[in-house]
Image (cartoon, rainbow over all chains, first blue to last red; front, side, top):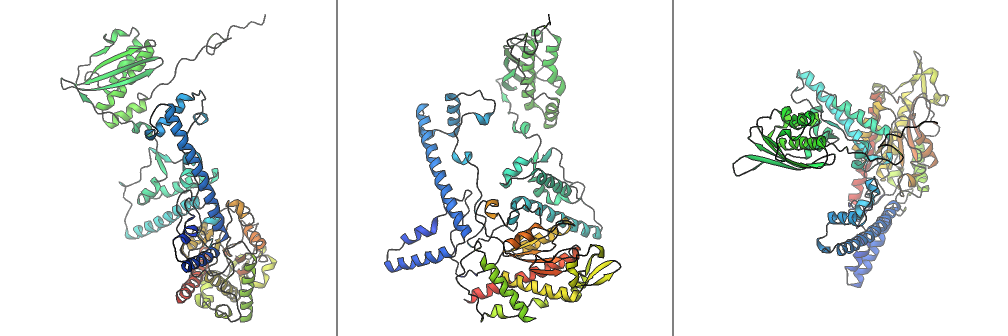
Length: 393
Length: 242
């Protein structure tokens, strides 16, 4: 054990994520030589090499090989299944993508299960079986990571780095105070609109399981780091562990307006849905505030509330007399139709507004799709929730 | 004096050969009587790493209040001043040199060295020391069974450290670090800085001294880092000669 390892023959470095393809040098080496004497020499060499490998590494190599074989088998099964599926759907197996597979499975095995993960699926084995860490030690069994024995090396590494940054920044601040300089107020780190990545994503990022207390200490350590006056110097490090709050709205970029024969910009929003109403809305700019709904004007709606609903996004953004609206809507009742048009107008208006107003509209709830629909009537009840009048006798 | 040191070195080697788990078959580098490295009383020159004055400046001599004195620490105590235990730094220096010598020897033979510290104030510097000299640190909550149930804990056969260095031996004021008991069970050699309220019995190479002050811990870290690096340097030198 405390032995010195001289003449270590460098084996191929193993870095694949699942620790695959690492059986390399032992078996293949002998085949390269044709001369018998050379072959003997190489056998001797492999023998020596085997002795220099620790039990830990040997066990790891065995496990990696097993895992490799298993994944190969699964992969073959998946490829075969994909071909079958493509044939069933009458498409070419060569151009059948994962997206097609998902669609086919949804079509062939329709499932009403609420939980999406419980529905039938067919995914590549890399996605189904959990990722495994590569070998964490070298041929002599010496771990690569200096915190290996804590069992949560990557997590504690993050904490270690955080403390290191805190120490460095404190030292830097002292130096600056000695020079009589103050931290730059303009560069102050702005953390609003972001939050710490949650426990699950942190676990996925580090490929380790983390306890609740560990996560708490993670957040505490980072808050401490952020509270330092010079924390902007390590902004990149901090931002690695923060995620934006409103990633969803930002993901939907407003479409660029098209131009009709009169040179007016227009944007059409299809699939404006609310309750059982559906419709499409076209916004034309510049305009005079003309509103036409199914060929009629705003009096298409009898109720005042519905009319208010339709013009609310225009009032909110102060665009009431600057654009023309054309809407086609069908299905549902008046309030559903009005709601669908309201959402369509708000969604389409984004193309003509600046980012600040869009953010205001988002906060006002104009860009949020309302998914509430009518709840069905239940047997033995008067309505969805209401019970029949019950008299004891 | 020299002969005792020798005994220590040899006993370490025989201890560690017992454990089959770790690294490799004991093929080459047989321990012989003619081995110049092992027969030398201080092969890595660790005695010149520090002086008693350094220890004094780093406040190593301060113990806890004498009410909390553990009787097993009495042999290392110089006396008590203003209600506090004061260590005999001459003895501390002797023990510390012995510990540094062993550390250098283990590092020279490519052993794994694991550094311990419990307590938030000094744990970062201990981790940093481990990182700097390419060894390992454990300054966090000790999950039971990391040594005694390693194959389950890490999900594979794992090589355990060959030497554990504890910069403090207590988990909190009352309980000893479980890793000390576990390393004794697995016959892993231990070096421990024992303060006046600690029990040195289970530690292979105790070093009586203050384990709380940042200055003292910094000094220990510096010394052990240098010892490890010296061992590794010599190893590299000898490997390149072969």
